[in-house]
Image 1 (cartoon, one colour):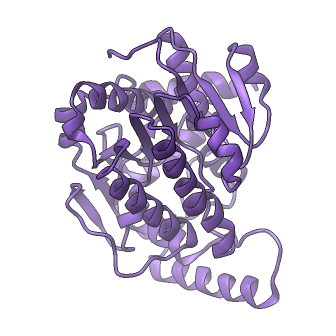
Image 2 (cartoon, helix red, strand yellow; image 1 turned 180 degrees about the vertical axis):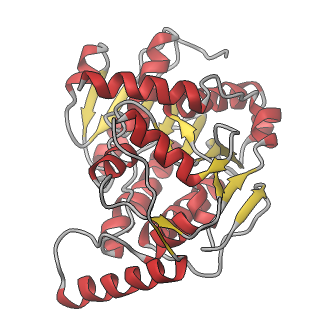
Length: 333
């Protein structure tokens, strides 16, 4: 992995799960990145990394953060399966457009954007698909729709500059994960298998996801012709979803999921809960949604030959090794 350690680098969402992992990798390589997040983070401070506090929806704040940079990793986003469209649109679309505008204004040479495979998810099986798969005609959540709009904007910006690569990491997990791992462990006693199929899915261990981003930046520097491309990234180990979930449960000292409900039943429960939450404007989020039911009940794994070929990506940490590391981390909490 070759990257210019002297260049000025900004990481948006530096306090987040992926952003922090990218910052750690960069510092290990001898870089001195700058973090841009809404809050201040002690973990980032301990790395000796400069922190800029600001909101993506604030163009002035984004402009000041991007000024003087030679490489931007745009990892910040609002994720989730529930919430108003506007709450996702502001950070994901408006925020990304602010990053693009600032990069153009200050002539930042390279931008690495973190997208998501969910931007092409149709609610049906996706087995071994590559980057040629089109966006769906309709989206099932504000998150997927706004991330698709942001990805399109970033790829369109590549025509005039900066040079851009978009990455689609699928289900990032590992130590310090604030999303997938805690949700699974918190609901350990209530989890139910969705359908009886051994539907395979891709995931990606956090260190592999971070390394892929840095490889993208290095490859884009070496070969500007890669600008405008998008890549799926994963651990390249598709396996039954419930094997992954049970592996995380085991790492957390919980029992495996054994109960099963048909996909259609769980999907209907999600639809009913969505109706209730929307009608009565309940706080929080439903325990199940139609999108989550489809995610749990279908196969979604990807052909990552393009990222291997173009970026030289090869996952260093296997799922088995990742689960061992996760178990060790959970035992220390």
